[in-house]
Image 1 (tube, rainbow, N blue to C red):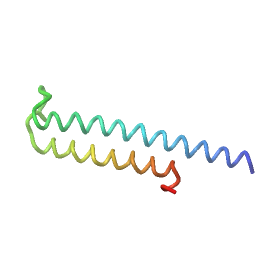
Image 2: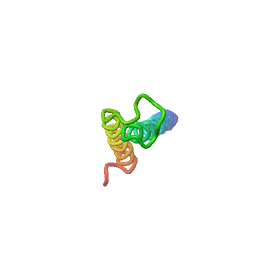
Image 3: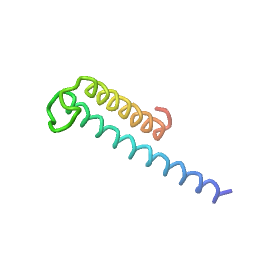
Image 4: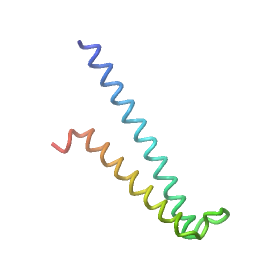
Length: 79
């Protein structure tokens, strides 16, 4: 029973790490999209297009929410 518990705990930790890495990647991509959309980062078809700024902002908010939720899950639901 102890080995199964530690194995499942290791799986949960690995999934949480993977979710954090993907969320951080989405956050960085969202920031890049946002700045391209508002014209700060030049050199792309996305530069100066407001829809890419909105997509970037949505990615940043979504990734931030995922990171926040993963943090809550780690702390035991805020208890």
